[in-house]
Structure formats: C-alpha cells, structure tokens
Length: 194
Ligand code: GDP
Image 1 (cartoon, rainbow, N blue to C red):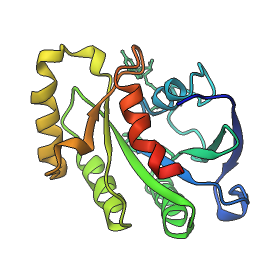
Image 2 (cartoon, helix red, strand yellow; image 1 turned 60 degrees about the horizontal axis):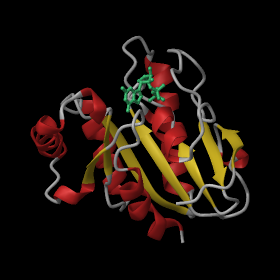
Image 3 (cartoon, rainbow, N blue to C red; image 1 turned 180 degrees about the horizontal axis):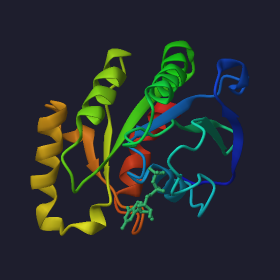
Image 4 (cartoon, rainbow, N blue to C red; image 1 turned 90 degrees about the vertical axis):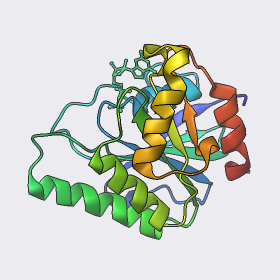
C-alpha cells in the first residue's frame, strides 16, 4: 500500500465530533501499552502521528486518522489500566459502544494483542464484543520481534485458544519495529476500504 498522506482528522468522545464524510474506517482496539499506536504509525510510515505511550488517567478519546484522503484508521481508547475508577471504565465503555453501534462507515474492528502473552479476560471481552457487532475478528499479535520465530506458532495457538478462534488466518504476527508482515496485513485491509 502506498501511503501518500496521513493526518489527524478528529479527536472525539461523542458522535457529533466524528468526522462527517463517510469514508471507510478500520478501527483498532487493545489494552493500553499493547503497541496500538506503534502499529498504526508503522503501517502508515509515520513516527509519531498516533501518540505512543499514553499515560494512565489521560482522557479517553477516539482518534481518527485520515489516510490518502481515502479512508481512516480509528484508534479506540485502550483498556486495562489497573488503577482506573469504575466511573472511568463506564465512560470508556460508553465511548466505544456509541462508536461501534452507530458508525455506519465502520468496516472492521481489529484487536491488537501482545504475541508474548495470553490475552487477558478483558481482551476476550473486547473480542467477543467486536464479534457481536458482526465483524470478522481479525487479531494482530504485535511485538513479534520480541520472541524467536520458532516460538510464534506456540504463542499464536495460545492466543487463538483464549479467544476461541478456529480460523488460523485471523491471527497475524506483526512487529512495529521491523514491520514484519506489513504488506500481508495491508492485503487483508485493502478490500475492506475499497
Ligand atoms: P499503545 O499504548 O497501545 O498505543 O502502545 P505503544 O504503541 O505506545 O507501545 C507501548 C510500548 O511498546 C512502547 O515503548 C513501544 O515502543 C513498544 N512497542 C510497540 N510495538 C512494538 C513492537 O512491535 N516491537 C517492540 N520491540 N516494541 C514495541
């Protein structure tokens, strides 16, 4: 995929702040610190467009990035901070629910997990939530550079088992550091945004 242009389009907490035109969107969900911003940045050849290393307690927002003036990547607020209050958790749930349930131009929601760890119960909840909206359930297992290639299959199997995924092709190893499998992922995303 040739990336000519990428920009922050909008930062939203409610539908009136979503971008107005109905370009196709692919959204990304995942635990805080899992490597979601790094994934987005590396896919579009940017260093810092999606902010990395977000701090606990920071305002939860949905960030829309417009790419080639043709489609958007949507960075959903991360979950899984230990010290988050119940009120904040509810706010997080509400922000995501509103987006997933109202956004007509949303083509797919992709879950990002860390290849080194079994997905958490929150990952499982998020994944089931994504599937309940009728999405395919693509999972990117990032930070694959942190384990040897010989151990990938073992790790991918643990991820598939926890998330109850039967189709092996739905879980793809990735590394934002060395951009492993970047084109393979673009090939998967392209038909969704055309
Ligand atoms: P986010 O909170 O999910 O957006 O996570 P970030 O993208 O900020 O990444 C969290 C930390 O993991 C940062 O220190 C990144 O440099 C690091 N990181 C993210 N992706 C990778 C990867 O593929 N490989 C390695 N080695 N480190 C990564």
